[in-house]
Length: 111
Image 1 (cartoon, rainbow, N blue to C red):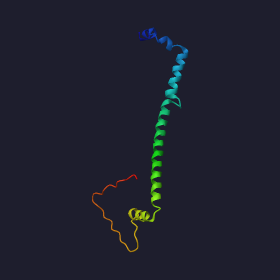
Image 2 (image 1 turned 120 degrees about the vertical axis):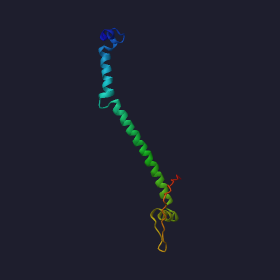
Image 3 (image 1 turned 90 degrees about the horizontal axis):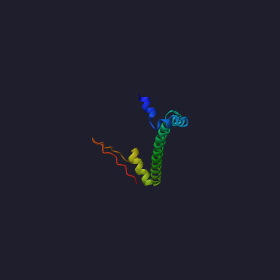
Image 4 (image 1 turned 180 degrees about the horizontal axis):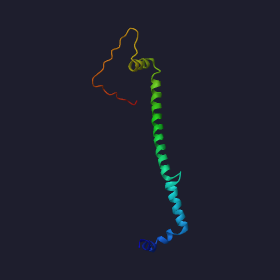
């Protein structure tokens, strides 16, 4: 009974046309089953976009590091950096490290 109603439908004769049927089968195959399917390309595009975002992140980090290196060319800045980051000292100095119970979070400034 369902097939009789389906055969009487106005679009049924167009779908049974061999050219249209082959075209529909080809489109379905290319969209879902082929190695180069739409789903596979969509997944690859998301990976590409993630990698582009990583590239932008690393390029901004490189620019920041270049600015830091340029700042460290000055002896006073280099000495200050060595004292703060690596706790270096002069021969006649002592360093006291004060630790707090609630460590304050280090705020990054983008200069």
